[in-house]
Every structure is written in structure tokens, then in C-alpha cells.
Image 1: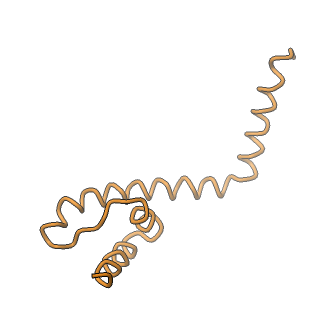
Image 2: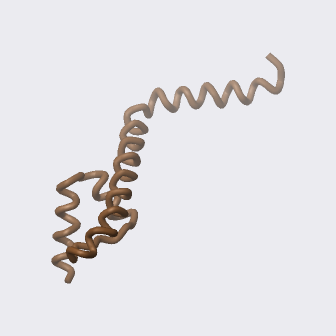
Length: 86
């Protein structure tokens, strides 16, 4: 092992240890991000068609995270919050 291989080997070993310890939280976080991305796409589509029905929602990170966490009930919650705020 030369002097230049030492830091890379340490970084690789630390990364593997990190993934071994935090496997479940990282998996949960990646799943949440994927579901929120789908929710953001849904909100973008809904903003185009929902205006005609008067059911417009904002396309933002809070709404996307709500849809990512709660799914279809989250959509109902967002509509309820919008209705209660007007």
C-alpha cells in the first residue's frame, strides 16, 4: 500500500460502515424522496387541469412532501387546508 492509497481506503471503509449502520434510515429517506418527486409531478399535472374545476393547489416542496408522506389522504388534507383557508 502506497501513501496515496491510504486516504481512499479510509474513505471507502468509512462509507461502507456508514451504509451498514444507517441502511434503514437512508432507504426510508430515498423512498420518501422518490414518493415526493412523484407527488411533485402529480401537483404539476393537477395545476394544469385543476384550475378549470377551481381546485388549484400550489406546486411547492411542502405540498409534495405531504403527498409523499401521506399519499391520497394527503391530497384530501391539502384540499381541506385550502378550503379552510379561503
